Image 1 (cartoon, rainbow, N blue to C red):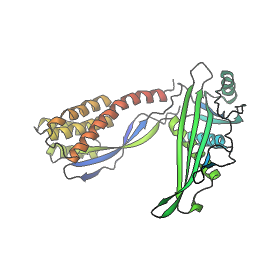
Image 2: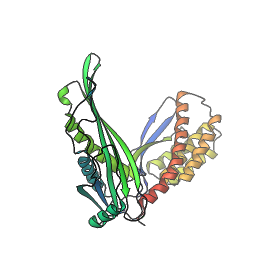
Image 3: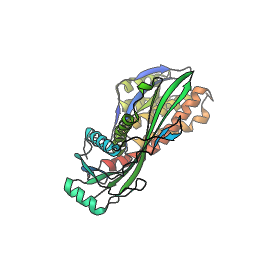
Image 4: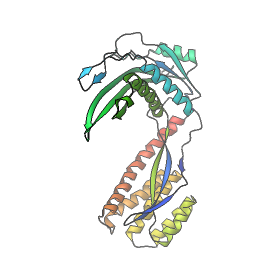
Length: 343
C-alpha cells in the first residue's frame, strides 16, 4: 500500500471569527483521515478487479410511475461501467501499487437472482495470472430506475431516480478469509423540461460510473473535512491564546488556556477553555487528552451561568457530540493503522 497516505490531522490556515448574541467563537477546518469500510489483508499492494455477475434482465427494474408499468431497457453493461470506473478511481488515489482488471465474465450461470461466489482455485489462478495479492469481485449489480412527473407550484417536474445495489467480495490466494460487502448508491435528475432529463440508458451509464467511484471511496481510507470551534471570550489569557492558535503554536495555546482556568472562578470561562484545550489536543493527535478535557467541559455543564439559552444549549450538544466522536476516533485510528500497514 502506498505510503503517501499518513495518519495525521491537517489544520487549514484560514481561521475566521464570528459572534453570536452570547459567544464569540473562531472556527478552523480539519482534514481527518477516516478508515475504509473494507480492511485488506496486510501486504496487499496489487489488486485485480473481476466481473462475477449475471446480466440483469432487460424488463426488470425499469418502472414508469405514471403508468405503474415496468418498461424494457436494453442495458447489459452495468458491471463493465462500474468496474472500469472503480479501476480508474483506485488508480487516481495511488493507494495500491497496481490495479488491473479482467475483461472476462467469470460467472457462467444464468440466474440473476443468485450470487455465485468465486472458488478458491479460481482466485489462486487469477492472482498468479495477473500477479495480484487480492481479487476485488463484483458479484451482483442491480439497477432500479423510476421515471415520473409531479406538480410543484402549478409546474410539472420530470424526475428520474436510479438506485444501484452492488454486492462485492475481496478474496486472497491463501487461506485469509474473504470479505463481503453490499453498497447502495442513489442518483436523481429533475427538471421542468423533459429534454433536460437523460434517457434511461444514459442515466444508467452515469449512475454505474458514479457507483464505481463511490465504491473506491469505501475501499480505502479517505480524507474528510470537519469544522471545529474555539471560544474567544473577553478574558486576557483566552485572547492571548488565540494569537498562538493563528500561528498553530498549540503547546503555547494550551498553556494559556490552562492559565485562564486557574485564574478565574467563572465556570463559563473554564468550560470554554476546556473545550479549546480538547480541540488542540485532537489536532495534536492526542485523543486521550482530547477526551480528558472534553469530559471536564461536560462536567461543568450543571454549573454554567447560562442555563439554558438556545445558544448555550447548542454549545452543550456540540461538545457532547464531540465526546462521542472522539471515542469513535480512538477506534478509527487503530483501524487506519491496520489498513495502512504494509506488514
